[in-house]
Every structure is written in C-alpha cells, then in structure tokens.
Image (tube, rainbow, N blue to C red; front, side, top):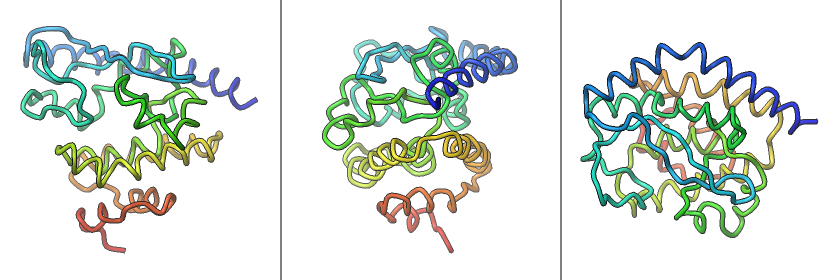
Length: 227
C-alpha cells in the first residue's frame, strides 16, 4: 500500500503547497525579473524512476549565458545573481518542482533526480537501485548536500569529499523508505533550511546522516562540529 498511499499524499501535499505558497512564487518571480530580466523558470533534463527523462522545473537563479557549460555538478558561481543566491540558500528555487510532484514525475520525498549527463555516476553500479523509485524534493542525500556539499564549488573536491557519502545516502533511502522515514526527512528539512539561513546549521543532523552510512567525517571537522 505504501506506493499508492504515498502518491495520494504527494498529490494532496503538492496541491495544497502550490496554493498556499503562491505569494512566495510571486515575490520570487518579481525578484528574478528585477535582478536579471529573462526567463523566470529554468527547465533541466533530469532522470527519474526507471531512468526515464523528464523536465524538472526550477526558478532561474543564474544569469542567462548562451553556450554555457551546464554539465558540471557544481554551479558556475560567477553567474549566480545576488537574489539567486537567496533563492538557492532558502531552497525557494526548488518550489516549481511541486509541479513535478503534482504531475507524477517526482515525489515529496525521494532521492534527488539525476542530471541526464551524470546518470553513470548517480545511477551506475550499486546506485542502479535508486532508479527503482521516483526522485523527490527531500531526501537524506539532499540534506547532506545542502548542509555540506553546497559550500564546495570545486568539482574535484566535491567528487572526493561529498559524492561518495551522497551516493551512499541515496542507497540508504531505498533501504529505509516508508511513511516514518519520509516524515523524518520532511521534518529535518525545516531546521536545515532555517539553521542555514541563520548561519547556525544543525550539525547534529549532518552527523546523523554521515554516521548512518559510515560516511566521510571531514565535513564535521570542517564545519566545527562539537559533540
């Protein structure tokens, strides 16, 4: 019953959120247009359940640049406009993905969608099992990436320090998925966003995520975690 009930909850939650968050959408749209005139939305080619491609929606947070290289796992920091940084840090740029959830391409909770040109990394080998579920807005890997990975802009450093634990956390979700674990990920998302905006990230959550997969603890040392 879990998949069927989860889909019903996804429709209800995303539909309600789309209505309640309409004022936030309007403010985001105005902020983007004043910051950097151009398209309000950015559509990315992503891979979801069964390795099926779908267009993932986001609010645009980067200046328009024709011919720009979009293949890196790390964003081009020089192209992110100031209001775009706020959209990213607050995760408001992800709100359009509620449409993806409502339409059935994504779920509220699940592994993050794979970039089309990174499938061999994020869905290859042991991580092939991740393609058995719909990608989501919230997940243990997404929280880990938000608390630690987003601060690392160098591609090689990211692949060394962040990617292995992030991939392991995607596999962990497949093992633990269920109503209780999904609710936990949604609950954890709130203090992660608020704490990061207030420059007091919840490092206890980060430690729990890392310990769950026996991951790289350098993140805790670099962020000054104290038991």
